[in-house]
Image (cartoon, rainbow, N blue to C red; front, side, top):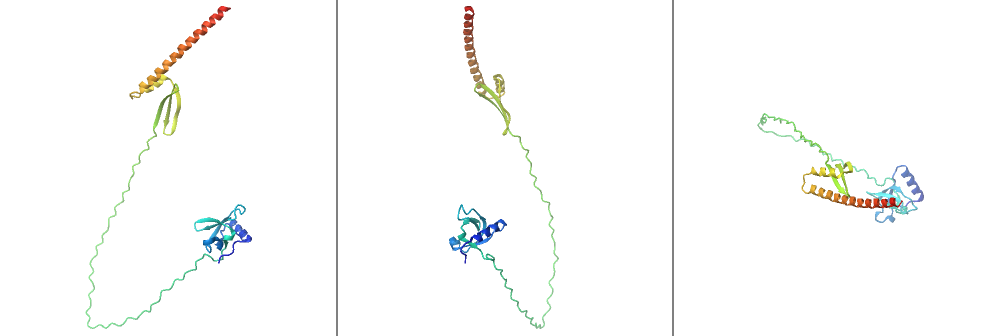
Length: 226
């Protein structure tokens, strides 16, 4: 029968056994319900102030917490299977052969032995499959010409490695790069962008010239005032 749970001294003894590297066996009491009478091993004692179920017991493949009232120290020898004795086969008494009465029995000729032909299989050397090693191809190279916010930039990348971070190039250099790409529409798009930038630059130049002319006229008036 299962005991009435673990006493304070037994809990201390289990704690010392765990510190020494042993896992004491326990038996589940009636307080454990359907598991009563089953054996388990204590693998850990947690903090009793956190939870009253601080006795962690390994039961099969599971490790579950129980209170000291749910388990008791297993009796010595519990869980061991008695050695099964194998029954010895009965000894049959050997019966003496009965005498045989032979009356004019002709001798039986010995069977004729036929020559045996041994066949030796010719061992063929196993052919080892030679797998062709495919040379590893280098990672792809990507060169990108981009236009954004009035600037042309070029970047280069091989696989996931950046060979050159985006750096600014002149519009004339960008136009020469695009001229190498024989793709309809690409060069026309670049020329349109350059034409729009040229027109905007000319407008800014005219505006600056007009402002400069006004400033020079104002400066001339100030000089004449002296």
